[in-house]
Image 1 (cartoon, one colour):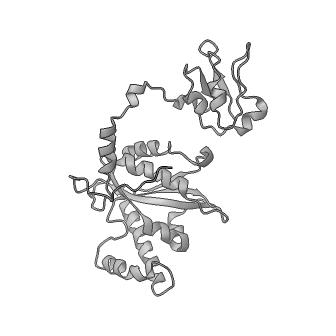
Image 2 (cartoon, one colour):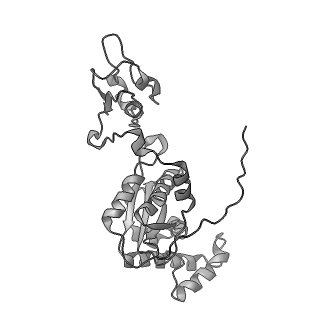
Length: 273
């Protein structure tokens, strides 16, 4: 595991890096030495990067993917609250798409943002599957409808609602993916003891919120996620590695319609204690 590399000329030995370390593994500076991670503690580093992110002198760097370090001036990243408020409030679930595909470079840029999403213990276990081919998206949607046919008349909680969805599919509609050109899934390590998809949902939320900045719209693919959990043909079609599971997914593409207003929401209900 990595250590921290300290520029002795920049370091003022304030020891903020040691006090802010979540794992408490950084040894504070002394009169003669700068802060460091003792070899016995290196295995406990969770690669969160707090030490370098909060260093007021930018005197240290975590010895991990150093070429990816982003340095910036505060004004470069500042967003006016009113602009951020409008951007987030006008976010919509998109269900009408243009047929043309989103270029892979644009998808990659959105995923680059999403990979910075927080994860439990900074585990960074989320991986991505993009179903880029539109015909393959249709096949995934078709398999989801097959799953719905299989649960009709069963105790499954969705059973009373699938007849309408199946009827729409049989009429040539697409109530599963809304004829979106692409699908993206965030997948996680499988555990038979813990069914926690939080990290995938957080990562996809970053994708969902970043996408409109690139002219891309998305909607949550809940039916596919439910089908994946119990329908083997769909699991085979997605062909994840062993011991991986779908956390959640989005279907996405270029919106066919323009958003022109922000609908109302229920009045804020909050309690401060």
